[in-house]
Length: 252
Image (cartoon, rainbow, N blue to C red; front, side, top):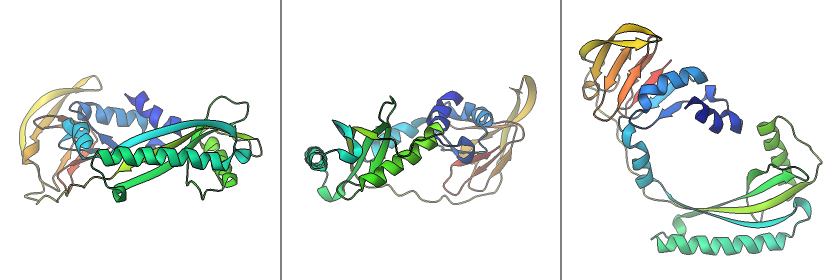
């Protein structure tokens, strides 16, 4: 699981140690602290509804459609008119699809990108850009910078080849309003205590009922917080606090 996070962070040029780990899934909070420790992440956010995090996101998220057209050529010499024709075609298709899903054109956001690579190389990099107003010289410079970020080097002045021209259409949906939770007390009531194995040895561990924890409640590990659909494991040396929205924030 730690390797999966490395794939979408370190492999993409991001330092996971500078990020907060957002935990999802019913079993996510069981493993989260151990995964974060391996990656050097110091803070975690755990929703009380972690078990349905993805399902809720699917229902609340914007509508999205992706389109792509292949038209290859050296970036600085490629036909700009042809590119405009491709995007006009994709834009019309995207707006038609969103309209069929009940979206107004004013609720649609169109964004653009192109897959670029150095001539003679194999791997391409997807670079966002603004169509019709984007200077392709600037686009090539952006590619040089992103290539260096991802692979540790670039080749300024080397011809760049464009391969695939992409359009993403997003239909914005109404956002739910999340309110702050009233604080009842700053501490949690321990439900029971039991032995839990941490790092190969048994440790007496306090167990708390999640529904009894209100904003500003603080718990020091080792501890366990039980929710109806998830279990939060707080290893020794870690701390947990309930934030103003009723969700959990863990620090390592």
